[in-house]
Each structure stands twice: as structure tokens, then as C-alpha cells.
Image (tube, rainbow, N blue to C red; front, side):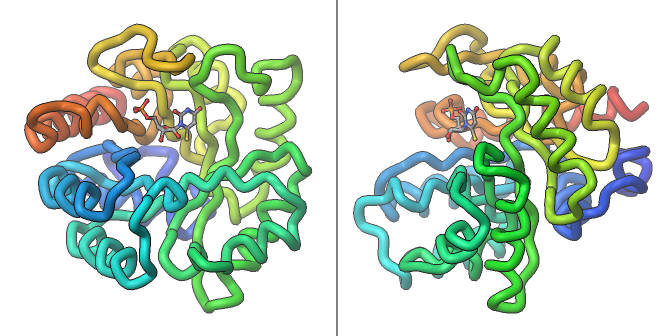
Length: 267
Ligand code: S5P
């Protein structure tokens, strides 16, 4: 199916260059799964991508989790991700002022050279988005920022009155914003977020798992189908996949469910 048909109004309304790349990738891969590859060794990450690469649309990394990181091994991992037709999403959760965030896109990890999408908190004000985009521009790249509008973890402060609304109004008109992180564990909160966001930006959701309930250390989970029907455009799944005995099969099951639900939503 054509992306315009699958994504409907979101396809026409989007204004960040990475969004259509993602939407097209989802249609090629028939998956809305963003793998949260929260492993601590390069060997583990390589094995995981070999297993699940065909079933996911994007690879989410925490580059500073990896014990045996080297620039060379990371470059090879990124090449592997590209060979699997994956967007690369560094979940760095930047939060500083614009110029420092721009500098943090460089540094030892040089995120600006390999990440297509990054996360940021808006706690320091909306200029962080321009700082991150300047980081990409410094090396002739472009990318998209996902602003955290909600979180999945128990007791987080993004639920305080007015925070989510301020985040959405700060990000909605900025073409550097790819979309927002919403809370996949609470479909009603997500429905509200979607109403505020409209069709111009995507919403990606962590806190989803086929086994609904509470996770470790305050993580909460909802069902991916409920999240997509409530307006999620990408399901971020970590331990649900990488802790299973058969990550490839489990990723395939998440992919099928996510794609079927997207078609149900669009149809
Ligand atoms: O609110 C959030 C935002 C994010 S990006 N809650 C989250 O859990 N995340 C990330 O999603 C978190 O950093 C982790 O990499 C992933 C969830 O992993 P899981 O193992 O709970 O599926």
C-alpha cells in the first residue's frame, strides 16, 4: 500500500524531513516497531539486530549504556542498521540550553553523524530544538527531534498541570520537531495528547508490551494495539523483545500486530 493511503492526513501535514522517511519505511517493513536496544555489549547489540532487523522500522539506542563502545564498532553497527532499512534514533534525552545541546551532538559519540532522530526534554525552553538541528547542520545532516510530552514511568513530573500543553505548543510549529513521546501505558492520556498534537507531528510511545502491567523500577505498560488506536505512530519496545528467548519471533509478532492495527486505524 502507498504511504499516503496508510498514513492519511499525517502524510500530507508533516513538516520534518525524517517523518516521511519513517512513514515510507514503516510501509516497506510492515512494522511500527522501534526496538529499544538497551543492551550493554556490542556483541549483544549486533546479535539482536541480526535477529530482529527484518521486523522493525527503527533502532533506538542509548549509546552511553554500552561498556565496550568504540567509534569503529559503532560505525559498523550503524551500517548494519542501514542495511536493514532502519532509522537510527538516539534516545539521549537532551535537556540543556541550545548552544550546549548543539555541542553535545558532537563530542566523543558524535551523535550528529549517525542519528536520524533524538529525544529532548523541553525543560530548558524551546530553543533546544534549534540547538540540536544546528548540531546536525554543522556536519551537513538533517534530523528530527522528539520532545518528551509525557512519560511512561510512575510519578514522572511531565503530568503536572500545563506541562504537556506547553511542550506541544512549543514544538508544534517547529519543523525541526519530528514529534512527541507519549505515554503508551495509558491510552486515555494518549488520546488527549493526539487531540492536542493534530496531524502535523508523530507520536511515538514507550511503555508498551504484550504483557500489560507494571515493569521494573516504576515502568508501566499498556497494550500496543490500544496505543496505536489511541494515536501512537510508533511503538517503542525494549525488554518485551530483547529479554525473550526468541527475539526474532517476538519482534515479528509485535510487527504484525502493529501493522494490522495501523491498517485498521486508517481503513
Ligand atoms: O517515558 C519514557 C520515555 C522513553 S524514551 N519511558 C521509556 O521507557 N522510554 C524508553 O523506552 C526507555 O529509555 C527504554 O529505552 C524504553 C522502554 O524499554 P522497555 O524495556 O520498558 O520496553
